[in-house]
Image 1 (spheres, helix red, strand yellow):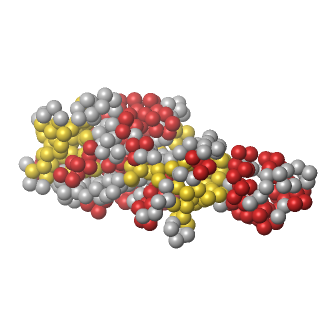
Image 2 (cartoon, one colour; image 1 turned 90 degrees about the vertical axis):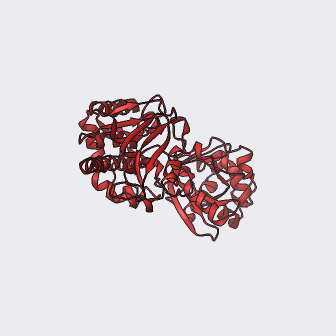
Length: 426
């Protein structure tokens, strides 16, 4: 039997590709090397499944800093509003939370995964789990099927590679698709971890004196070797035993990785603004007023009402202030330095956790070799790519899954059309 479309990978992109390809009546086979489909989808959004983001399209693309503009054509076929309508049509009520994140009302990823897999089955897609692919087969510049690790040959007019990146490997994303792309002549841009905690060898990190300290609504800035601001993100963060984590640390991670590569330096400067809604002068006046109101108290104790107690000794030491100093003896220049530190607390960051520990993989199949309107390879007929195997990456918050669903739908739709045309010609 010759299938019209074989899809490798039963994650977000692969499942949506299966829905799109089979909706026109194509004979579709979905292969996955694991026991269950949608494993990464099942743990997304903290196990609640952040199915998309409700932001306007330009904002969506801005939150996909890794080649988000490539998605304009895919979004014209299937965008975030289509994703919302798709799941609601399947009976999954959605709710909007902070920053446009869309979740099922049930707060259970299982609801989304089971419904999506159920729809794939309903549309007649043949599903084979525990079926790892060895390689994609090509002949005369076109796809002719796949060979499984078992040696079994499966023939197809089209193959969609939706095998994911290298992050979260316990869900099956172990980078298998890159070799199949290279076999067709594709280049793979450098892979790197994104949306991943930052590491630091700074003394206060190594001593673990701030481990577990959370900062709410702080702002983190990454600087290049020439002192130019690369990016600033505002939100929550946490100091860990190895460095910095939390939402804004994850969002800054790709800029740290790229700057380390570009500068060839051992570390990158990151600064933390503890009061992004106040300027240095406002902090100076407010904190001095506090010390004046309690002029007999040591500044170390007065500052507890203004900034986290655990970070005060480090701030005072960096500013050259004695913890026991009282209001009447505060050296004004040092106090201004203290306030500047609250606005730009420096941390030298020397890297990130590994790509396997990242939420998202940066890099992948070179987009210059992919038709953005169809997701078809420009190098091999009938070969399509979608999802994280492509060199597309966004921030957490529903952006990566939106890219996966959009590219998956686009690949599935056009693979089915390609297969129909090929069948008509033969």
